[in-house]
Image 1 (cartoon, rainbow, N blue to C red):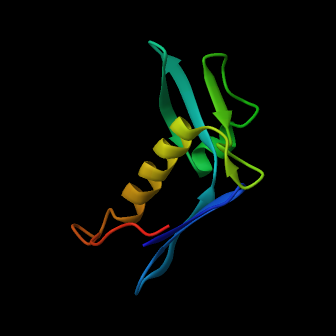
Image 2 (image 1 turned 180 degrees about the vertical axis):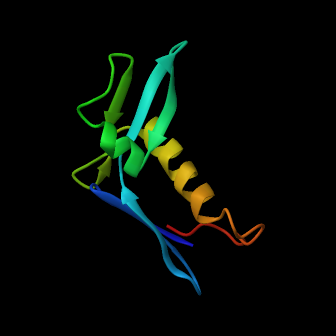
Length: 98
């Protein structure tokens, strides 16, 4: 698996399957008990940009090609990996290479 974290879009590539996910790098979250709770990621979160109620904020965790919000970026990456591997049980092996 390879992940391209872009400022605008995130792509997930799986060997033998090609690009399996191409979604906006956007996360909508609310804050509860001092922690950010993800409400939407990708296309759904992008629809919320500029239209969220006061308790929900939609942001792009990447700015100028750099991670600007590590906590939100981590949740976005987890979400995209889970979505890309939904139909492939137990196929992730090996060590991450950066």
